[in-house]
Image (cartoon, rainbow, N blue to C red; front, top):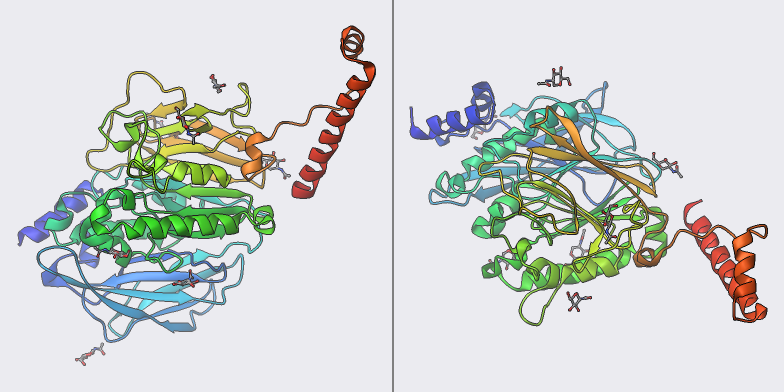
Length: 499
Ligand SMILES: *[C@@H]1O[C@H](CO)[C@@H](O)[C@H](O)[C@H]1NC(C)=O
Ligand SMILES: *[C@@H]1O[C@H](CO)[C@@H](O)[C@H](O)[C@H]1NC(C)=O
Ligand SMILES: *[C@@H]1O[C@H](CO)[C@@H](O)[C@H](O)[C@H]1NC(C)=O
Ligand SMILES: *[C@@H]1O[C@H](CO)[C@@H](O)[C@H](O)[C@H]1NC(C)=O
Ligand SMILES: *[C@@H]1O[C@H](CO)[C@@H](O)[C@H](O)[C@H]1NC(C)=O
Ligand SMILES: *[C@@H]1O[C@H](CO)[C@@H](O)[C@H](O)[C@H]1NC(C)=O
Ligand SMILES: *[C@@H]1O[C@H](CO)[C@@H](O)[C@H](O)[C@H]1NC(C)=O
């Protein structure tokens, strides 16, 4: 028995996986096979498509996806593009990545599929397409920092995904665990991808790059996942229901050794993408803009991360010239929600911009917030996964917990978005929840005020004020008229946007 094999057993035991799984998916060089493994699906930019990606450790003679509407025959056969991937690490181990884009899918339809060919087929999996329009309520599982070892949230997530609770999973960076990543020649990558197959073969698994994926210029990340667009998944956006989701790399701000050009490319792309998402017809259809990136702009942990710095790179940009600042860009484009991870904890922030809290109102901070809302959800479970908090809350901290867990997000409609945090430590109960309510989206929303009720003639105090006022009754009348006009205008724009 080689040490490699013992190692896989060790990982399997720690991850709560059965050895049988790894027998089926041999991660060992000496028992490589062309059997499909690490099967996962992802959204493309087109709602009538689905991307299927998998791995084999040997090159099979041929490779396909066969699929069909659930319950019928899987009689549509699409050949895969096979690419040879020389993994990161000393051994230069070779694996094969297979990709198939399924096209022409019907909306709201369940499909069965399997992948493989003459050398072996996978089990049968199924997925459902969503509605094409924006009048429905997508549900997401959201988390970062889920590893092979100590994957605390894995079991409940597997169950919820397989019970059809989610339309997509958002994994906000850090997919594999640090030190052994290189030493084992990307076998932990294989183990991780096999571990998430139990979820990712059923619902689109949408990812952002995290710091642990940096080896060999993020090659494991870029090769193993198939995200929309043509930037190797480093930055991309996609639409689902009333939501436009943007994923980007905070890591381009930290791994400058891979090139400054990447920051520029990403920033220019973000600007363009946000501009397009803000075109009136687009924003009316998909008013929610959500970003996901690994390292947060704010955090109240004590781990020596950049987010502890008042002026951190992601928030205010790089160099003394503060180039490519993201907080300003997102604020000015009316991003509603910013999802982060990296800190191994959960933290919900009050609406915040430039370290200032902009509650909708003190009583209802998340009703018509006047700045983006941030959450940090990096406690899904990985090795070294319990960070600490500073003793005192920052004024933008609304809630925080070190419990292991993950976030559920449901976007009810154009005005209501719900977030809740599940705690593994507290027996899978919900320990935090919030409804973000927005009657208006876009940068104008930061100034939006609930329309005042129309002035009512029978209200006494108004009349008294008129009498005691030093201004002439004509000024008062003009003022009242302006208020009324404003109110009518607001109601009109509200009506045209939402009713
Ligand atoms: C795959 O190709 C090899 C070499 O051409 C051949 O020996 C083998 O039988 C083929 N396997 C199958 C399942 O067709
Ligand atoms: C791919 O990149 C080219 C420019 O290099 C761009 O014109 C094209 O729209 C991109 N395609 C997608 C799907 O983003
Ligand atoms: C790293 O990869 C990116 C593509 O994601 C590429 O643009 C860049 O040039 C690469 N950097 C190096 C140093 O190879
Ligand atoms: C943010 O606040 C600081 C003071 O804390 C101020 O110097 C700076 O100009 C502000 N930046 C923006 C973009 O408002
Ligand atoms: C924001 O709202 C919270 C909760 O109501 C309140 O505790 C806090 O003081 C508010 N902050 C500001 C700056 O209004
Ligand atoms: C949006 O969803 C919320 C929460 O379910 C609901 O209270 C509200 O009535 C919905 N609004 C519309 C216009 O359907
Ligand atoms: C945890 O929750 C389940 C049901 O949700 C309950 O049956 C069980 O007793 C709970 N365990 C503890 C320790 O509270």
